[in-house]
Image (cartoon, rainbow, N blue to C red; front, side, top):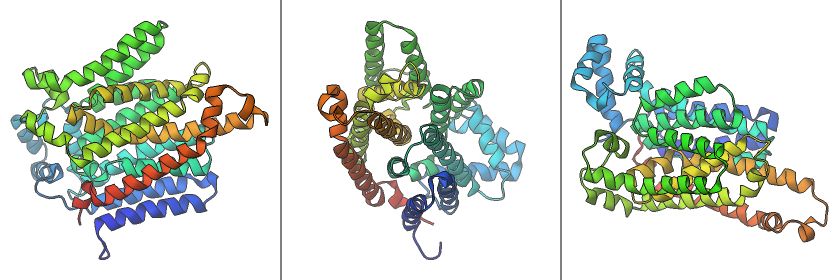
Amino acid sequence: MLGLSALTWFVIIVAGYALLLLILPREYMWIPFVAVVVAIAVLAYHIVPDETDDLYRYYGMLDIMRERGKAGLDYILERNWYDWQTFVTMRYYFYFLSFFPNNRYLAAVTMFIVYALMFLVMYKAAQRYQVSKGYVLLGTLFFLSTYWFYDTASGIRNGLAFAVVIACAYYHLAEKRNIILCFFGYVAACFLHSSPILPVTILLITLLTMKIGSKFVNIVMVLGLGIGGALIQTLSERTDNAFVSAIAEKSADFSTAVSLNMQTNYLVNIATLVIVLLVIWYFSVYFVRDKETDPIYRFYRYCSTTAFFMIGCLFSSLIFLRFARWILPIMGAVLFMVGMQKQADFVKKQPPTFIYTGEKKMVLRVRTQGVMLLVYFAYICVHFWYACVGSSLIWMHF
């Protein structure tokens, strides 16, 4: 577009969003949020996939349905491409998009839905806790820099399914609203791709551990979840069980998974997990302190449990990468924004002598606030640089 590369346009969109958010008053924060979602969708519309991309193959399926209508859908179902006989949501989502005039709407509509859901979650959190504009800017930039744009646009199903689950989880846990709609969202996501089965299972375990008062039982369940994450890939490589294989989506051979673990992008995703774990630990005192009165604690517990599961998945490469690319960015953004605002509100209520006489763990966090901000901001810059020179963004073209 206009002689500029797709990567250049992505950088312009992010920079334009940041500038717009800084210029506009906080009450108009929704404007840059809407603008960046629309801009991302327009960018996705103009992407031309390579022949090796999933998106390229999806275009072929859309062509069949556009030319033959319902007969085209039946043709694909008979051959069970991409397990369409099982994944009902995916089947009808693609069929619906086949009525659009060209294939490019597949990526555009998908990216609009995904980014709209993620920015809606961040907007709701920012409004609920009256998060200052500076913290909102850092949180949303963390999301934009660590969320894997091209993988979402090309893969379609994974990113869309995870976005639906996370948005439903936030509304279910933090907002306590639209519970029935959230339930249907979980089911729809699981029939879009097999991957959401895991975050939905983690959600159920999180709710169960909060219902059980015993700390010992909770520890055992969470440890079991971490060990389970470590065993999934191993089980998938040693069994032909369809359910286990569907969740792990095992590689053709184990050497492929090992080589994937050694790639730079895998190490970068581990770094993102470390940052999110730091955010979870640093702000834990503020979330736990309000656990009886503030439902955001439920979402915090879900994020913590998910992060622990991911530690167990470090050597289950495909599972770990999917969580790191499509779940960690939004969790790291929301917990940081809300946590920083909770800390600011807490400090305002303390006497001038708090820094010397306050509770040790609270004082420690207040004293190290600058360090936390610096580490978070530095990682945003480093990951954004990596996204532009080493991630899948470099394969994106018009």
